[in-house]
Image 1: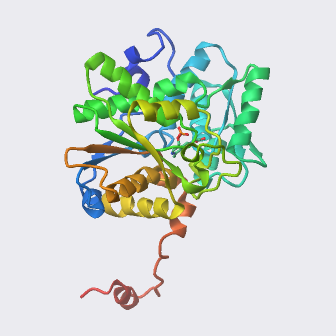
Image 2 (image 1 turned 90 degrees about the horizontal axis):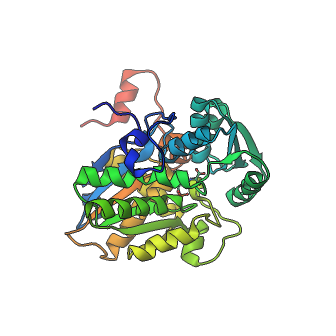
Image 3 (image 1 turned 90 degrees about the vertical axis):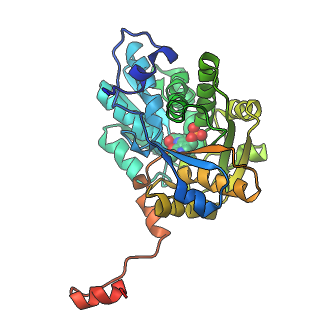
Length: 351
Ligand code: F0G
C-alpha cells in the first residue's frame, strides 16, 4: 500500500478540503500488537492489544494531531506556531513546523522535560523557552500569547489537533474489524482521551460499529480529574502527564460519562513496574506515562472488572527512547567484566 499519512488516509473524516497543501511526515499507521505474554503475566481473562504510538515520526501520538494543526496553520498563512508542553507536543510541533517552513516557539517546564524530547525540539530548530514553573503555567502564558499575537497555538486546545488524533480509533477499528470493548489511556491534558472517544463515536455514526468504554489513568501526584480539583503542584515520574489543570477536563469527563467508562489513579511505582513488564514480556519500550494505561489495566484485572468476552486496547502513547534516564534508573546496572573470555563466561552462568 502506498501510505501517505493520516490526512490522506482519512480525509473524508477531517475538516480539510482535498485541494490543499498537506504537511506530513507519514505519521499514523502504527502497529496494534496482540499482547499474549502480557495477558498471561497479568492473569487477564480478556484479550489485550497494545497500540504502539512510539513508531510515529517523532516518537509519540502527537504527530497525528500535528499534521492536521500545521496543515491548517499553513492554509491560514500563519508565520509561527507556539505550544506549551511536557515534551512530546514540543517535539512534534518543532518537527512539523520545520517541514512546513514555519517558525516554532515552545514553552517547557524547566528541569522536568525528558532529555530526548528537549533534544528533539532543539534539533528541529524550535525556539525553546524554559520557564520556572509547570506545564499549567506554560499553557496559561501560551493562551495569552495566542490572544495577543498572530502566533497560532498548536496545543490540543486547537481543535485540529483533536481531529487528527481521533484517527487512531479508526485504525484500531479497521484492524480489529470492530471496536474493542474497552480502551485504556494515560490522561494528562486530557486531549487524547477526548480525541479517541470522538473517533469511536464518529465511526459508529457512519458504520454502525459499537462503542468502547473509555478507561483513563492519571498519576497519583497529578490526578486532578480523579480528585475533582486542580492540583497546584503536580508531581510524577511520568513527566509527560505531570499536569494539574487539564485543558480538556470537561470533554474528558463527558467522554468517560457517555462511554460508561472510568478514571482512576496509578502510583509511580505501578507505572514503572508496568513499563518494565511491557518491555520484558512484549519487547516494547514505551515511556513511563504510556505505561500508566497498562498499570491501570492491571489494577482493574485485580478487581475482576473484565470478562472473557472483553477486548482491551491500551495505547502506548510514546517511545521509551525519549526518556532513557528514567528507564535506566529503574533496572539493575550492567555486570562488569575484565576483557577475558573466562570472566565473561563466569558472569553468564551457563550450566
Ligand atoms: N502520554 C504521553 C507520552 C504524553 O506526552 C501525553 C501528553 C499524554 C500521554 C497525555 O495525553 O495530554 O492528551 O491527556 N503530553 C503533552 C505534551 C501534555 O505536552 O507533550 P493528553
